[in-house]
Length: 218
Image (cartoon, rainbow, N blue to C red):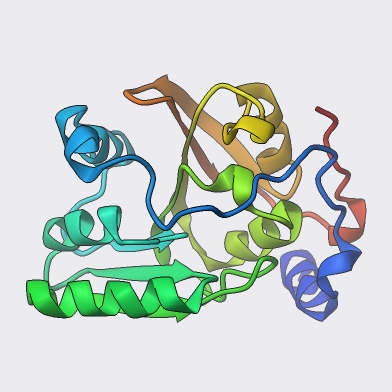
């Protein structure tokens, strides 16, 4: 009953009930991060999928999907028994990604228009949530992460890739990232240096009362 009450309370709270980040938030400047060719040469997607254990049958949420670099690479891995949920807050990005997925003949992708404070994903339905080179652009990270937690399966994982530099320069220091994510009800599993940047993996922890969430200091 405590977990249920916390979840209902969070749903009833407006975004401003959660603290805003005590750091700069980078502007959204592009639907893609670097060229896909360079990212493939660095084996970025393969590293992330290996470390997070993405496999056939998984439901994977690509949050901030943009042009769909991960969407089109994860969809064949999870296969027809799995699904990718391509989520973004920019409607035209989703429009472009729909067209890309259609041209590629990919059938196991759903599309979700989220908001800065809510990914709007199905409850308890996600095995792996990917937030790749975009966490520093989330205007309301505590609200979004709190609601993302309710979308995760009990054994789900949240994977965040970013660069070890300040949000002002489109990155996120590791220590600050861990503080912010754990503040809303996640536990750090691992941090791995990859090319490029680092991959931080978290698992759901006991739910917290949203009124207790405090902003981390940079």
